[in-house]
Amino acid sequence: MDEELRSVTERLRDEASAEAGADSGEPPLIDHLAATEDHDELAAVLTEPGRPLWARELAAYRLGTAGDRRAFEALVLLLNHRDSARCASAAHALAALGDPRTARAAAALATNELRVAYALHPVRLLAALRAPESAPALITTLERRLGPRDPYRKVALACVEGLGDLGDTRARPALNAALAHPALAEAAVRALGRLPKQAGGEEG
Image (cartoon, rainbow, N blue to C red; front, side, top):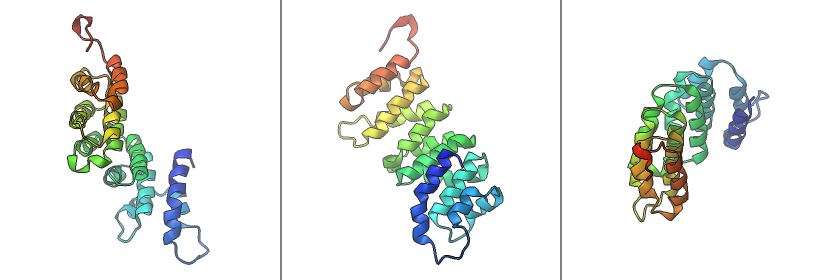
């Protein structure tokens, strides 16, 4: 078991223990799902009625990191979950999955104003994917976060950092606007410094 899978399994163990019934003498379901190499069994967990969320998450994570696209829909739902730890594990699995639909789905989540409280991990995933959808979605999300009373500074900061990583010159106006916000200014300076210079060597 690799370290990432071990971390996910241990995080879910408390949930699994709380729902476990009487000791049957069989290995706990969570250990079985963490160890099995039967992808069809894992995929069935995603669709069988009555399966607890922790089991669906573990099955989706294992399928996603193995490159099995049957995990895609479940992982996208988890990517926008209210529990940040679930979002983080889903983002890790989606990055490993390599499904061409991932960037579009992450962009839709990152730019959904009704779910902006849970946009941090979709934003970070977009930066990691470096897909055609990444920079436009991060620019849109950042521009919406630059109001004087916007409470989602972590999302804004992730956008600034992600745009610096992407190095897309289309981000320059949004990053320049971010300079006016003390919580974002330092990161915006760094991000602007990573953009290709404009024609004529001018900055800003």
